Amino acid sequence: MMTMALVAGMTIAYFERSMLVKRVGGSMRDANLAQTLAEAGIGRITGQFASVDSLLADINGNGAPDRDEGWQDLTTSPTTLPLGYAFYAKAGNPTSIVRRVAVGEGAGTIATPLSSQQVDVAIQSMRINDLFISSQIRPLLFIQTAAGGLTKSASTWDKEISSQKVAVWLELEVNPSNSGFVDMYCAGASQYGKAKSYLRQFVGTYQ
Image (cartoon, rainbow, N blue to C red; front, top):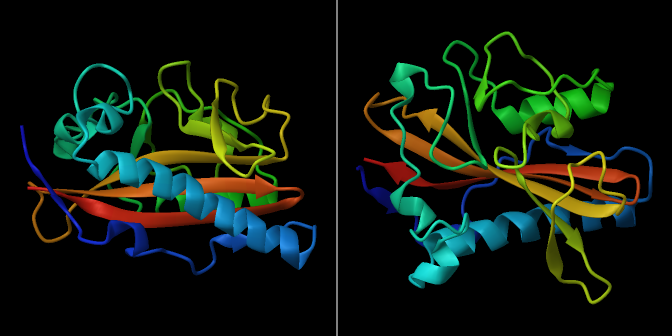
């Protein structure tokens, strides 16, 4: 098993913002709140992922901290990953998964659910709901409560009726400097009213 090198101060680490914040109708206020919701969803998962509390770090509830089981050799082109809320893009298309989602949502791409946790090189755009493959393989979905907190939803993105929601998942990538290392990002897609936001944060590297 490889170990993960976590970035200090990860909750304010790298965000890939350019071209990922989409204002689809709605007001500037909704757009700003959608971005805040995406940040909150990402922060919740990265905070648990890095936690020294083994119960908090066991996000998938199987008895082990998720960071200890998240590594996968991507050079073997696996179709499944140890964590059900993780995905990776097949080599040959450097576009991040969340960027493809942002493009697909903005363009109204026809929904085509993925068949595995591997995103094919030919997929240029996709919908948020495409990542909800099954009850076990899917992003973590949260809705915002009346008190402003987040509560987990068992629905898919399309079936969740709340207009204040955020889907969060992990994206794995082969490190460009060393094919034996795997970089991990946490991505979030949120909706507040009619506005949507898409963010990605660097979490760390398995080495």
